[in-house]
Image: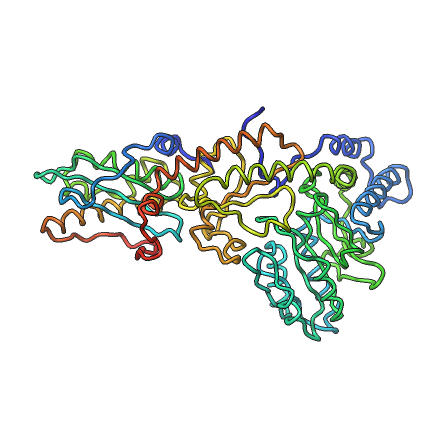
Length: 137
Length: 403
């Protein structure tokens, strides 16, 4: 199976790899997936007082499509409000990266990671957690 | 040095140019049907087949009458298992095999179960070898066949074939082995090893695809299999179908080259393989899978913990290797062979198989080492699991959301 150019680009030059201080109240962390399943994503956002995402970082254990999905997610998150970020749908990622059907779960995982990070931030800051995690598989 | 570098010789081997040269006349000038007994075209083809049969027999210490040509090892495995079950069903219905066998053996056994057979699937120890005591304990009066592979395709471990065949024979059962990865790579002798039936194929020994063989013992004991393909009664009635003359000639030539060059080649490849293994296991948290004392000379299967195999292979973009990762299989399950060694799923996901071959050079191995080291380090920089490991977090204690 050949990878799309965009997957290869994100995989070869991943954007926003790194770690934010997860103990900071401004930082939301989402850790999703499981090592036994072959993919784990950790996605972090830093949010300002206006609930705008100012920074996003990721680290991913997984295949090229999983790495590309999380790299793309961090790009999309920066500059968005947490409410708008909540609207990112896995199918947007599928479309942007031209993921084949067997790799759709990578995009679902990225969406889960985004929602988990936002909810972590919300709970830390006294907001209620929103409906998260698409059920998948 | 040309890129990409082929290090997947357990999947298939490139054809030796000498084999191609031997085959070419049989596509045109000597196109005859080997079963045409009454004219020169048939005789020429038959002569090619007869010579190939001798070449193949010689490689494994057999008589040429004991070689049945097939379309490949999958057919040979099927013919051996289903054919023995049908032929000997009055004697018993029990077959013993093991969980790390190739699917061609496992699924043929599953088929036999549907026909009323009973099959025992022996587990393996953490080094990939079967426990002889388990085999001994599994033997019953109804056991007609023990089918255990010679060398494993994923991890390269070599089973204790002589001990296994001795146990089978002691209990009056036949011994069959899928020797696809072993024949032509290490010395295999059907008499010294006590083999009654053996499957192997051309394309794993620098010969063509689409041709293989089943060795069927003729003496002590005389073994018979029920044909699974009905037709003109070729191959002593055990495998009907017009012979694939160019393929068979190629298999013969490939066998001859292996017989003459195997010792030197094995020495050279095991040296290169060891170098690769030593230099890659310098990396922290890297593990060689399977027994390293009883192993084919050209294979190394290594898990690089905290990186995922498919992602890793993408970074090793100039290397053609394979992985036990789920993402690389159609089933989305990690390798059943690695899991049967007791490897956790995450280590199975992190495995890479390096399969060296006749045309692998020192320069290529050096390049492969460099690119693999770089790729593993790159992916570990991206891996949250690696970061957590480095922080001393016990990953087993985290409640992962299974998906």
